[in-house]
Amino acid sequence: MDEKKEIINHIRSIAGRYSEYEVFVDWIRCGALAISNAVTPFRGKVWKEREKTYMDTINRYTKEEQKIFSKMFALLTLALEKEMGDVLGDIYMTSSMGSKAAGQFFTPRWIASGMA
Image (cartoon, rainbow, N blue to C red; front, side, top):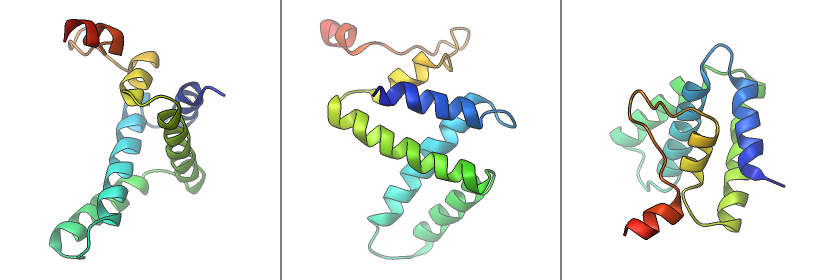
């Protein structure tokens, strides 16, 4: 199973009302907020602000699309278990979300290692 390709296929399946880039960013945002709030011991002002941002973002999508977000995180976990590396950068560039005009490029790990 190629988890990265499956994630890209899921992103494309959700895209329509939103661009693939927006779906990708919203997926990452929701994941980061969920993890951050899960490990925050106190439900203070910052926790509530993050929760509001999460809800505002996830509620832009249908219930089915929200389930796909969860599936994509499960696939991301599997991909990271196989290969600890810049899986998200690879997904970003493989799906052609990077913009050469804006100078957005993903440097493959083997090139970055060679440069280091």
